[in-house]
Image 1 (tube, one colour):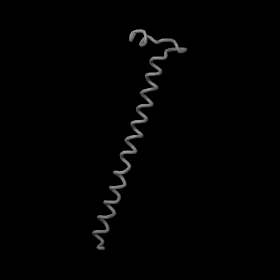
Image 2: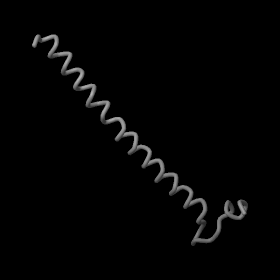
Image 3: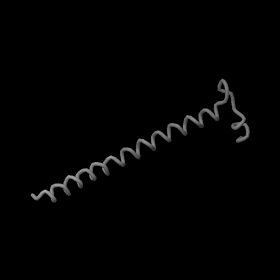
Image 4: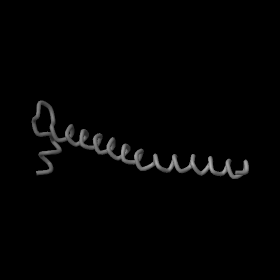
Amino acid sequence: MKSDEARRLREKESESGRLKKLPAETELDKAMLQELTSRHWQTVHSGVNGEASAADVQCQ
């Protein structure tokens, strides 16, 4: 194999590895955002000491 071909092969393998990581990183980002969003809504709707908040009262 020529050195030029070997270099291109290494570049392609590197790019392939990077592209394979993208879906996992995207799923991790999605999971973190869902957790943060659920915590936010639990805080907004739980009020102090578990009582209904003003947001809950207005929604009903």
